[in-house]
Length: 366
Image (cartoon, rainbow, N blue to C red):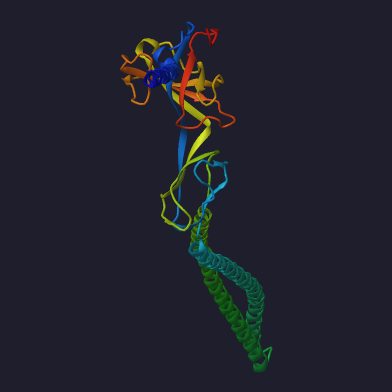
């Protein structure tokens, strides 16, 4: 009797287990009868993943997030040590300040040299004008003395004046001609000086742009080196490029990381997508931009709105992790659906089914 009772109990448990399994597998073994104009596909929720890595070498001081944490755009993902870079920045800042000061000094020196050369040139030109005026006066005076001398010589020859008076006019002529010759020599010296000063001024004006350009380029290079190091310092503070969820934490505080070393992997959950697979007989019905609905077991009866964003052009074999109602279908086409997920309820890896409406106005349910 006890054996019979145990057999009956085991049979009941087996029947219940088969019933539960059948109910769970019912959507796969007996797909729902869909309305005309609706296609159904299966897949897993995926998210665009971004690997956040380091651009510089440093030891991790902070890594505040763990796997599964939500991260906002611009939030600190990791902070690296920056002592060495800070020291390099200070040195580069000193070099840049020195180069800028040197450029300003050269600019000021060149300006002062030009001002001095122009002042000397103007002074020489003024002396030349004065010398020309003096030469003109002395030439007029010497001509008068020459006329007086000739007149006195004629008077002396006729005996109208004494030898002393004739000698006085001769001495006055010699004095006037000597002064004129001296003034003309001073004028020639002033003109030679003007040529020399002008040559110096023109040389300064010619060389100054190149010298200033070189100094400014040195200052610009030093400033650029400083800015480059400042960027490196900023790169020790690593922020999230998007709002998402940490799916992989690849490092820990205290570790030494190098450029390109991954720190965390983020999944963009604001725009998850589902890739479903349709047989060749149905793929021609699907077009970009057509509406779809996505269903997951975690939220039964709640559809998530989606849209077709990609339709494969080539067929492929059915992926092993995707079950289709018709297992005889081996060659399928993938269709990518972008899903609206404003509350972040959908997570990568969730199995999901999707319905695509390829005929406008058709009801989603029969």
